[in-house]
Amino acid sequence: VQLVESGGGLVQPGGSLRLSCAASGFTVSRYTMSWHRQAPGKEREFVAGIDMTGTIRKYEDSLEGRFTISRDNGRNTVYLRMNNLRPEDTAVYYCKGSSRYSDFEVWGQGTLVTVSP
Image (cartoon, rainbow, N blue to C red):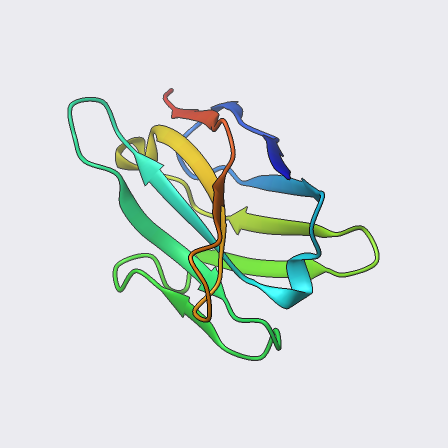
């Protein structure tokens, strides 16, 4: 069971990135998938989540409208599209799979996003 994030990097303010989270060993459509981030010196925080059905999506209040979570069942991959990036979005972004019906939980290793001129 594994999650592998990719797509991070250096981007200028106002730019966009799409992060990917590829799952192996389990099926993303059978679990709640979410993105979290941890900025330097801060605690890890929730960014966005998508439920098993793919119809319920939730976002951290301040990010809704700029960030979009999506899922490709065929690729067994979850995405996070980030638009109009700001320096305060700089963080390591982590993907997580979890279940509301069991203690299943798996985290990826994270991908670094740096927003700087």
